[in-house]
Image 1 (spheres, helix red, strand yellow):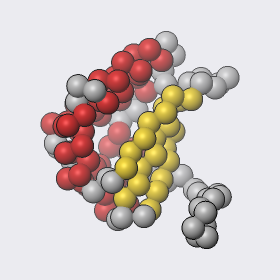
Image 2 (tube, rainbow, N blue to C red; image 1 turned 30 degrees about the vertical axis):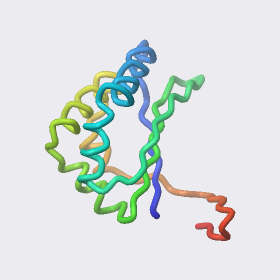
Image 3 (cartoon, rainbow, N blue to C red; image 1 turned 90 degrees about the vertical axis):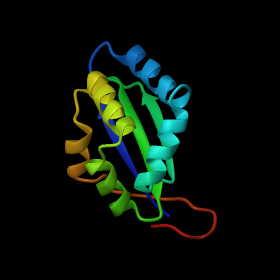
Length: 119
């Protein structure tokens, strides 16, 4: 399975709004999120809030059996959930999800996997 992480800088003063947004994704919109993610091929997705001296960040980890294709499908998706999600993400980060996904990818530097596989 392929994996990738992204970091989205939070706009100043949006920490609580980001928490509420992702709580809504996790609770009220969970079924929509699961269905939309399956349709684009994302098998696992985790979001984290990372406080930092230079400003809070949202971290996301995606995993997929065909990550490049899944991220491209996500970038092009017009699913109502993805449209809603991208709009709300932009309100707390100022970032367009579509533009972010089209940009450079994070570089994996180290992977520990007890099955014996690494990078």
